[in-house]
Image 1 (cartoon, helix red, strand yellow):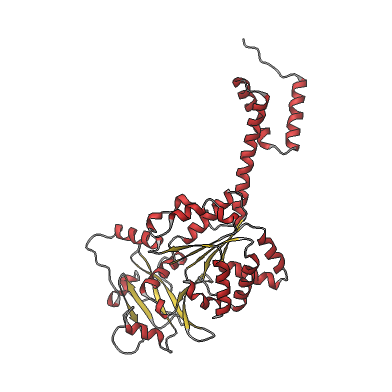
Image 2: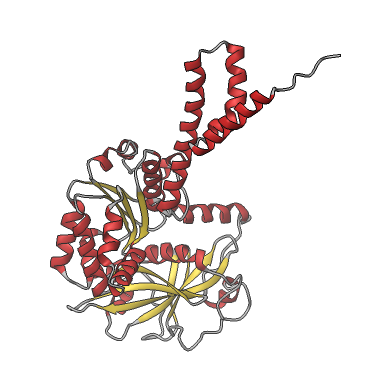
Length: 409
């Protein structure tokens, strides 16, 4: 029989005392692993210093991992994205070498900014998040905001007389990510607060800013105030790296690919008119509420035209001189545009596109859709920006907000 070794009372007491000391010193990894590490050290004939280093290496590695998790949670990213998940082949004109160089984090140490501009769905938020995640892993304090969310928090902080404390808290970060500038136009009060905040953090905190609006059109986002807009851009662009995103929406390309893969060859897709029932997934035209624009557009692939009350009897096709003249007309205020689900092959909802007047003259267009009491908005631009390609991209972006599997009624 093999004799079982029973620890002596003194050895048991020593073990209990050691474990109590490790708890008081807050060394949970050492506490959990020291018996196994001690056994390995004995088998490998490690010195006392080697045994101690093995325990402390494990403790520090776990602390670093926990710290990264806390920094990622504090950053409040909507989803965690990484650089290895981004397909650079879909954005061939994007400066990949610059992106990878920025991922090293030198821009944060130098308190430089990154400006990302391009169409919806081209991966700006993905890369902005990925760079933010990388900064967290490099030990930096990061905070993610949408531009609308930041503006709302600034307004609420001012109303609660705690604006100074709010700005001071954000100044303790090394990097702020401000996403979707221009997706929703700012109010005058919001624009002023955002400008003031960016002036405060200038040269103190690095910024990553994403936008779908060309910088030349930013004046329309800030109530037509050219001086304020010029000053804001001057601050953002100072010591900034600019990344331009050009190309088709990733989500749109993915959906179209799925639709094409599921559509038998030789199958024609209806373009509207008498076939509108098939586009909507049922045989009758959808019921339009009193708030729905009376003028709406039927669109599929490269064909789109106004369908509804309009001057004359002929169809007004998009991206033609009559369409541009119709947009510029004083009586034109809004229209509806279809949200097509390529996977289903028919229209699942409509978005409203509305003309907004600028305080200093002129107008711009906003696309919006209300779902379950929430208003989703997107900046379209001036009349020259209201093209089928732009509307199609926005409609696909709104596809993610559709909660009715059939159609708005």
